[in-house]
Length: 140
Length: 85
Image (cartoon, rainbow over the protein chains, first blue to last red):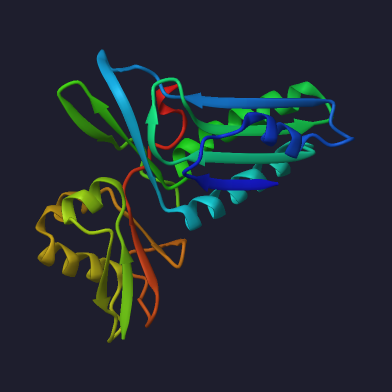
């Protein structure tokens, strides 16, 4: 397992290697990528802020939730913070399991839970302004 | 008796600081600490209904008491990860 908040560019190959075990028949990797538009407005770049110590702890708890629901062989999550340009990767979630179905299901579950619970915040820097995206009150 | 306070994202921009302190004596609760901070940083008051509190990286209830050396974090609504996807 690996849970990390980092200011450095994310390396998907490293995360896949991390979760790939001899018992794994499938690895599913989710990329979150910086998009060039939001609600019809042009995005210039994003800035992510985080509470890293707590974010890593919550990520570990979510991974444990996933492992209780599906027979996973490993889980890893990384989120990049700081300034990210269009097309760069903000988030990676890698899940391995003996068979593909549970890896797909668990990865989908984990990205949804990540968005609800992990203390990381995004600011969209738009043409003509900037806004912190404040979606969900985190689940306690 | 002091507790450290950490602010993030828009909260830190509104306050103009990412870290500050509150006096943690007399069983001060995290909600009371937030109200003290709102006196020093009035812009923070906009968050009274949407904040969560964490002490030493665990979510706590508003009535949780602060102790000496605790780290209180004010947690605004989150947006990490997939919202842009």
